[in-house]
Every structure is written in C-alpha cells, then in structure tokens.
Image (tube, rainbow, N blue to C red; front, side):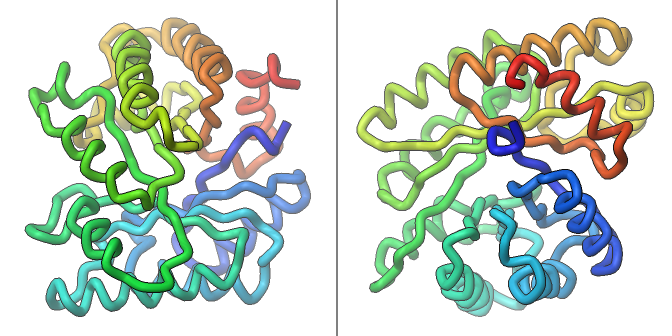
Length: 267
C-alpha cells in the first residue's frame, strides 16, 4: 500500500529529519516529500538534500523547490543556484523536483519564467512537477491558474501535477477534467494533498488560515463532516488515479494508523 502514497516530512533540523527517516524505514515508507517552507529553506533545505543523498539514497524523494524561499540576491544568482540543484539531482534516479513559485511570486522569476529559461538549457535530462490550485478562480477571484498551466505544459518539461488542498470536490473534478483535456498527449502523474482531520488542525486553521487554501465552514465547524469529506476525497483520488500526499504529521504509530484508516480501501 505504501507504494501508492507519499508522505511529506516536517522537521526543524537534521536531527529531527534523521529520526523521521528512521521511522519511515521501520514502517516501510519509501516515498517521501521534502517541502521548502518555514524553517526548511536555504541552508537547511540544501543540507537536507546533501544528508539524504549521503545517508538515505534508498528513498524515493520529491524535493519541493520554492523559487521564493530559495531566492538569493538577484535573478541570475538564484537561477544559477537552481541549476546547480537540478544538476545534482540528476545523478540520482530516485529524486524528483516539484517546482513552485512560492507564497509571493518573484517578478520575472516564478515557475513559468524559470521553465521558459530551462527550455534553452542543453543536456537537461530532468522533468519537473508543477503545483496546481483548483480553487483560485471560484474562491479567490484569481483567473490565471489555467493560463499558467498551459504555458508550463507547453514547455515539454512537465511530468507531474500536484493539486493544492481544498474541500470542494466538484471544483476539483472540473479542473481535473480540464487538465486531462489540455494535457491529453502528455503522460502525467497526478498527486493530491491530503490532511487527516483533527481538532488541532481545525483550531490552527481557524486561527491562521493558509493563503489561498480553501476549507469550507462545513468542515471547519464539524469534525464529523471533515471526516466524511476526507473519505470522499480519498475515494475521488483513487477513482482518478491521483496519488495521495499525506501532509499531516504521521511520525508515531498512532498517527500512522490514523492515516491508514482513511486509505483502508486500498489495502
């Protein structure tokens, strides 16, 4: 079952990372994602890549490369740093890169721009994952997501789409149908964010909602409704061949069992 799920790791330092990687090994978790946000950026992000490369090369790792968080001094230096990272990752077939613009897009240096730059690179033998937020148009009056997707897919450098979390399956279905239509000649892997409902998660989101992440009041004010929605979302992912990416903490036997309880139909 673990081959059909990915787990995103959250950590504050290399010691915590090591503990979580060992937990993954003990529980036969092979597919992990390393985010690039919060404390995991710049030096810690780069150290993480080096540490996993040297000590845990058996994992299938997707690195989220945030052009916002990894930005340094100017566009030229930042692009050079990104190319260095890409070239390093090409030496290991178990590594992939999810390219994201970040919470605040840099002018002339977001994922669309960088993919255009990459088209001109010679001997580039890597393809990238891209993020897609299905909820921007309906809930945030942002109409550019489809246009940006079409520009990204036209580069020929994309092999996966990673859906932002949200709680409107009808909107998600519409966007999945659209993406499959536009990318019909491309062989794309699809991934979808998944959170395990809890009182703590709801309280945190109410206190500080995440930018451009839509969670309905129905879910935020009823844990039972949130559980029901999550079961529906897991079913939708399975029906549409979308691999779940677990973003909730899973680093204890109890929490991992809670994750698996939502995915029991895949056992």
